[in-house]
Image (cartoon, rainbow over all chains, first blue to last red; front, side, top):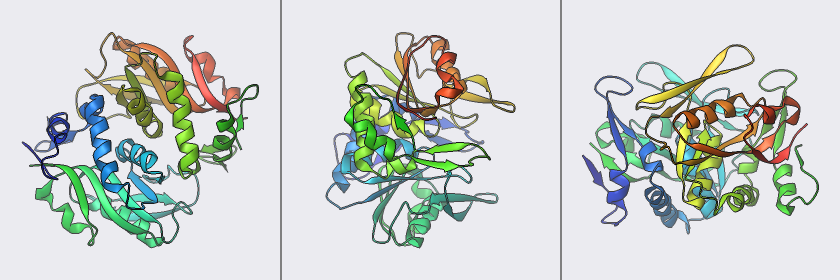
Length: 183
Length: 184
């Protein structure tokens, strides 16, 4: 059952119902929140982007950092609308130039996230965008990368939050804004 | 540096081409890698890039923009949003959570696979395929095959950059390819 945050914005029910839940993916017991169906509804996709743009357009945001790969779908339209740079945060060995990298925990083991050196300057005001926040591990790696180069991470923004996994508490004090919470 | 196409070139293309960084010897020696991340750091160049595609495809009844993971996810959605089309991600294996159809394609060594969700495409859909760059055309061809197997008509493939020496244009089964620039 999807519940919506952010008050009673009339666009939220359509956005929430456009998201498909796939049971037992990637493994038994996980209810996967599939945003591909939202992308098949042009009005719901447009409304999703508009809600983020309305929130951030007057915040002097200079960087939208999108986490590979679904953050690449939501980040760029926001960046284009507010005139910010888009910075892809990628899995290892995908970015061709010199990178800095940050390790983060998975359920079993660790992974690394990379960002190009020189993409972000000290004093940049950044948002981190991804489709969903679960444990917060990926988002907190992105926050650390941006802070290491002197950016201020203003907020993290996701379409969906899984509040039971308490990712919100793992962002080192960075605020989190989401459109929809899923049990 | 990438070169824009000459003859009546839109004045925006020069600035877009200049914003693309070439990284030598990536992913291996001898390859001059066309890095579009620097284009994304130039909001005007990025906006102009999207606008050039949107101007071409508005009013052409395109119902689907299919973007190839991962850099096609950066260019495809802004185009889809502007022209009112659905966006369909074409992904590496095992990323899409629902039922998929999949298409194998050949790499330099070995093969890879592209997947699309069943039900994303209807037989009356008119589709674009979007990626940042076309090299050999293998990935675009696999993308076109997936869309056609689901009954869509592929109207055109659209990329920011073409590497013409690799002749990808000839591997698209006669379907048109539109690019903003070539790089030699």
